[in-house]
Structure formats: C-alpha cells, structure tokens
Image (cartoon, rainbow, N blue to C red; front, top):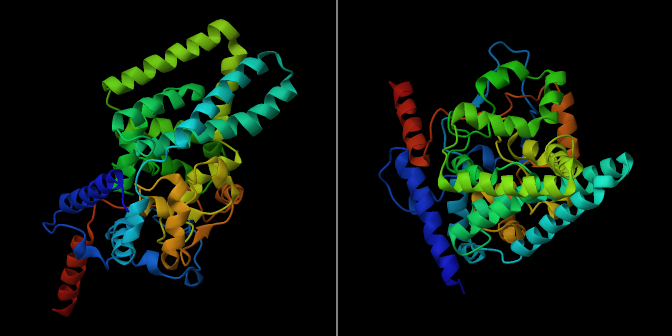
Length: 388
C-alpha cells in the first residue's frame, strides 16, 4: 500500500511534470498525453549506437543541440503507465541521516587525529578515506535537495547544512535551486549550469592539457560557473549556511589548528578531482554516444555514493531515494538495460582527458525548455512545409 507520504509525493511529481509541460507553451494537462513520448535517442538499443564522441576537427564544433524534450519525463510517464507500483517507492529514506551523522563524525575525528600525523599518513588517509567521505556527503546533500531524507522540506534543508560541515565550504543551501533547474530544464542554455559555459567550452574544447586541468579543478568550475550564468540569491537559508559553516571552521582552527582544516579542505578538493568517485560528474551526462544525454553506472562505487550511478533512474524518478533506485531498474529493466551505460568511473576520467573525440562540447543542449507536445507539433509543422 502507498503511504500517505508517497501519495503526497506522487501529487508533487505530477505537478512537477505539469509545470514543465505548461511552461513550454502547451495547455494540455496531466500525464496521459505523453505516455508514449519517450525520446527517440533513449529508445535506441545500445548495440546500434556506434558513434563515440564527436569530431572536434570539424568546422564550427559546438554542443549537440536538440529541439525535442529531454528524455526523462516522457520515459517516466510511459513507465508509470505500465508499472504504477513504482509510485510506492516514492518518499524519504530514514537511514540516510544516520549514515550522514556517522560520516560527519568520522571526518571531524580524523581531522583532529591527523593534525600531528606524518605527511605520508596524512596524504594516504586524505585520498582514500577523506575524499571518499566528503564526496559521500556531497551526494547526501544531493539526496536531500529532493527532500528524500525527511518528511518536511525544512528538515532536509537544515540537515544539508549540517552535512556540509566537513566539506569546509558553504554549499548546501545554494545547491538546491541549481540542481532542481538541472532536472526541470536539462541542457537548457542559460538555465542548466551543469553544462559548460560557451566560453569555457570554447577554451577547453578537446585539448588534453586543458581537460586535465579541468579535471584537477572540477569543483571550482562547478562553483564558479553558476556565478557567471545565474548568480546565487542570498536568501536567509544561504546566509545561515555561511554562518554555521564559518562557526564550524573557526572552531576547528581555534582548537585543533591549521592541519585539521587542511585535511577537510584537501578532502574536498581531491574528491572532485582525479579521484574514482569524481568520475560520476562526467559519466552522468557526457555525450559519449551521439544524442544520448544521460548514462547510468552500476558498479561498486555506488555503495559509497548513495547510488548516484543509477542516474537515468534518478532523473526519471527524482522522488525515489537512493536505496530504492535499484528496484526501479529491476521493475522497468526493459527500459534501462538497452541504454548505453558507463562501466567505470575511473575509465571515463581517463577517456575524457585522453580521447580527442571527447571534450567540453560533448553535451546535449537546448535553447529553451521543450515539451513533448510542442516538439511533436514542430515536427508536424516541418513535415507540412516539406510537402508544399
């Protein structure tokens, strides 16, 4: 039986879908009209998709521009029409808060213990434990940006600020609006800040040294890019995040010295750089196969990253928590098994840096949000023009 919480979330996701649909200029309502409108690219078997990357030597190299709807809403509606029981998976995961609390405690204790350790021990623990732990906290905050930790949105927001503490830099409260835009307006120019800025892409392109530099400072790009595209609004919650983070950092510095904060900040830097878990940033939406804009990864690193590798499943069902995403894949396996997937996060980092067919332009973009109905109407209009 679907709980009251799941029922509320089911209504929210329907409203979420309808808002995206209506703002694209269509007046149709509900989930019925798009039940069969899965994106063409997402329905092509992986075996038929042979083109890897794009030709960066071609004149006028650019992003891949699409005028059809992003694939996730259409696929969600089709899957729900066939497997409505997936709605029973909606709702918070109660275990996450205990896992986060343990990780925050672990990082704080290690920061204190390592302040007088030898440099080899400091470096090894920072890379293996600290970076993995802080990346896990980033992804717990990601979970809670979808209100998947607690029943009330405010509780998720407050908990995210506390999960932010070992990261060392205030981030949690500013993340949510950008991430929700990424879901609702995937690839939309000027809205989805997950995609490289045009100037950024023009400079980096497929140049190996610059791609390596991008990977080294990947989190800096993710932090600074929104400031260029859509500067953060200084809400009370953002100010609170800054204040609580500053209090934590000053406390660590005052009582335990610079090395304690160095451990936490280096853990944050490394976790977004040449670290196995950082491969998820690339694997999720890097256009490895022409026209395919989202990829899942089903490997063991999901155990320390809240199943963020189940990325097609997450985008299709953003109200399903990390612990139940494998069940979505199991139920709707005929939708997910044929899709291209990432086999290795370490491998995608290597491929991105070394493969001349992959680079900053390897992303799918849209000039505006497009609903399936609007895209269909545009296609019919074009066909009529051809017939004249």
